[in-house]
Amino acid sequence: MAKVHVITDSTADIPDSLRDELGIGLVPLKVHLGNQSYLDRVNIHPQEFYTRLKEVDDMPTTSQPSPVDFVEAYREAAKDGDKDILSIHLSSSLSGTYQSALLAQSMVEDELKVTVIDSKKASFTIGLVVVEVARAAKAGKSIDECVELAHRLFQSQQVYFLVDTLEYLQKGGRIGKASAVLGSLLNIKPILSLNSEGVVYPVDKVRGKNKAMAKIQELLREQFGDQQVQAAVLCTDNLAEGDQWERKLVDEFNIRETNRAEIGPVIGAHVGPGTLAVVFQPIEG
Picture 1 (spheres, rainbow, N blue to C red):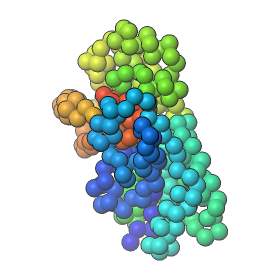
Picture 2: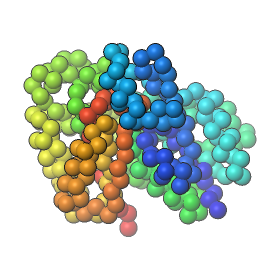
Picture 3: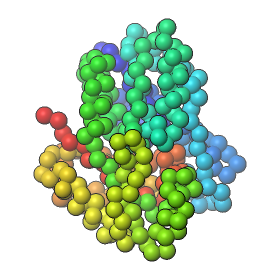
C-alpha cells in the first residue's frame, strides 16, 4: 500500500485517465473567460476552452486556488489513512499557487504531514514528474525517496516551446510589448523555455515555425545525443501539429516512452492557441 499521497494542481495538465489510474489528487485553478469563471479541468476542458476563446473579445484571465482549497484537498487525501502528502505545484514565478499551498500546509501542520514542492515548471513539464513520483509512491517508496526523485527529475528535464502569437504572453506580462509587436511583424518565432527559477525566457529567435522546430531538434540533439529519454509533446488546439512533431522526435531520438498532453485552459490562457512544446526527461539507470 502506498505510503505517500501525491497532489498537484490543474496546470500540470495530466490526462484525467492517468490521474485516476495513479490516484493523483487535483486542486484546480480558475480561468475567467468572457463573463464566466470556470474550474480548470473540472467544468471546462482544453478543447472547449479553445473553442470558446475564439468567441470572446476579451483576453482570458486566471486565478490561483485559495489556501482553503488546499486544506480541503489535504484533508480529503488523509481519509485514506495515515499517509504523507506530497504537494507539487506550478512555478512560484508564474503564479501564487505554491504560496497558497504553503499557507495551507501551515494551517494543517498539527494534524497532517504535508510536503510542498515548487516545481519551477509549468504544464505537463510538471505532470511528467508528478506521474513518475506517483508511480514511485504506488510502488511503496517513502516520502523522502519521492521528494528526492521529484527534485532530481525536475533538474534533469529540458523543455522548449513555441507560441503562435506573442500577444498572450505580452498581455500576461511575460514579455514586453515591443518584442511582441516586432515578432508578429517579422514572423519571428522565439524558441522559449523556463529557467532554473521557472521564468519564461527566449533561447533563440528563428523566422518561421518550421525553422524553429528544426532548431529545437538541433538543441535537443546537442543536449541529449543518443541518450535514452522519456518525451512529451504538448499542444493546445493544434492536435495534428502535435502528432507530426511526435513522429519526428520518435524517428530522430532514442525515446523509450512518449506522452501526449493537451495544454489546459489556465496555461493556454497565457500562451494562446497554436502553442507547441516538447519535454525531454532522461531515463535513469
